[in-house]
Image 1 (tube, one colour):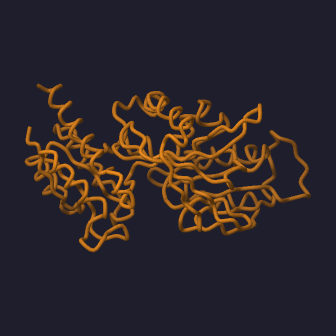
Image 2 (spheres, rainbow, N blue to C red):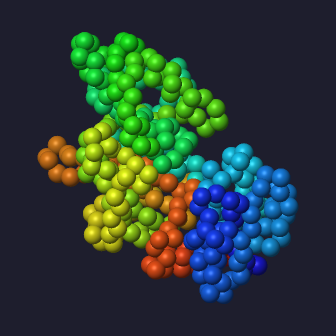
Length: 354
């Protein structure tokens, strides 16, 4: 065992501070060092693939990946290829690309449909033909939300509602493609009116290409009361964020860019939700591909709903584990929790091999 951890970053990007790193990168490095290991930061570029691979293989027990996908000019393809090869060469990858993709992809919602977390009428479209066949019927049951697999901060997430009073229909009908719909994008809450057919053709861009697909789920009207995000380090809840959309007409996005307000709470202030989610992590991991280890740093976002008895309930809206930041909460010691988890996994792996 080398007792050395490498933190992997991408050069540049809006997430970098004056030292060229993410603000939470060096705190992680220093926390690992304080626990008796050595640690350093290196950068990844596609053209450095082999050099970075050889360096990590020679030096490190583990890699902590802190790369925002948008900061890699050519996407994550080569990065993920390298990480998988390192994993196969016995280097611990935190978080492994397969886990990132299975937890972080929007179609995780369709795989969890019908569980305690996600409504049964939640679908994933992997081809345009599937979308054309199903969505004109799906929208007949009420307002829907479409979510693209790629993108972030609400880009490509649309609330779609019928506003055509000339069309008579019942739930379960397949609506004509000239039906007028109102579409609101979460990135900035802007509104567009279109025909169902034209909007579906527009959405084709989200389905085509590598990892392209759309998730179609029921709109939760109580989203205007805000989303509830749980930040996790492995299987430990750290804090809860209440993200309330801007109080203006048509607003439903809970991103900072769209004017949402964030309020932070201790996990025990949302004890029922937190306990329910933590207890369901083994089920989530099983449904998403029998994943042995949770992501190292990740979040789960929930929306309020109401059950048949009028009680509050929560619906999972998204999970994120590609590069979750926590620099505004360094005073909580999250970096030390991350360091503890990294070292624990290294030592558990070493004991299994030994």
